[in-house]
Amino acid sequence: MSAPDLRVTGYAPADPSTEQVLAGLSAAELGTVVDHHTDTTSYLLMYDTTATWYDPKPQVRTVAVHRFLEHGTFVLDTAFHTTIAFAQRWLADRGAPLDAVSVVGNDLAQPADAATEGVENKIRADSGRYDLAQVFHEDLDVTCDAWTLVRDNAATQLPVRVFLQQGDLEERTYTLREGAFPDTATALAWLADRTEPLPAAPEEPPVQRVSAARARSVPATPGSRTSQPVPAPGVPSVNRGRSL
Image (cartoon, rainbow, N blue to C red; front, top):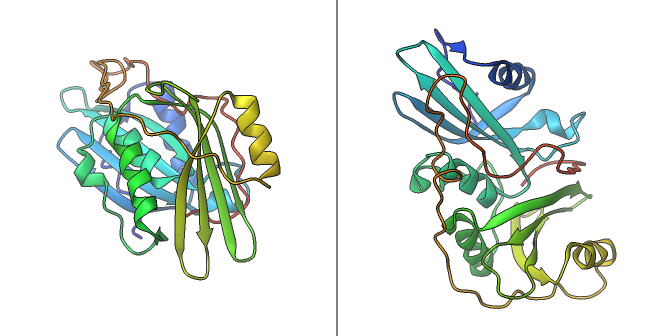
């Protein structure tokens, strides 16, 4: 993985938030998994190795850069993720072509089976479908568990969903499964115990709910920001090791 190239040399941060995000990125040890650039935008999906040691956040990180050529300024948005597919969806919701950020190399673990690829495709396909509630990441000796707890806005039943990712660090593969629950408390209780199989999610029709405020969100002018999709500040995040 190469060092991230934000392409902001010669530009100034447009607002204090961008300045703060830039300082955090500069302090992190990041490796680029995939990126996409235009004259005015950059989208990066990265692996944050510093999160392993002292930052209690998942290690998959995304950044969206919007440059204002006429003003010589730029704005940054960033988020952490436990699942690559959610990171790719986050970038697409901010204007990245989904096909440009959907292919990752062999530096990270690979899907173990077709079912995993199917769940990932579902996550990537639907803008605005999932509202993030919590994420968790933990490494053991040979396994790596991560989960993302969301509310499925398209669900007609059991709207709280758990996307459980289980990795095999020796094989460098992972599985991803979707479980369905009636509410957050029930989902968290299952995650705390996990003696029963993950309750399978019912079949739901695909949706394409793209709203102006949540999809392909680009600040209109330097310093202006529209409301952004999840993850939101204050979402509980736990990380205890390597990312998938």
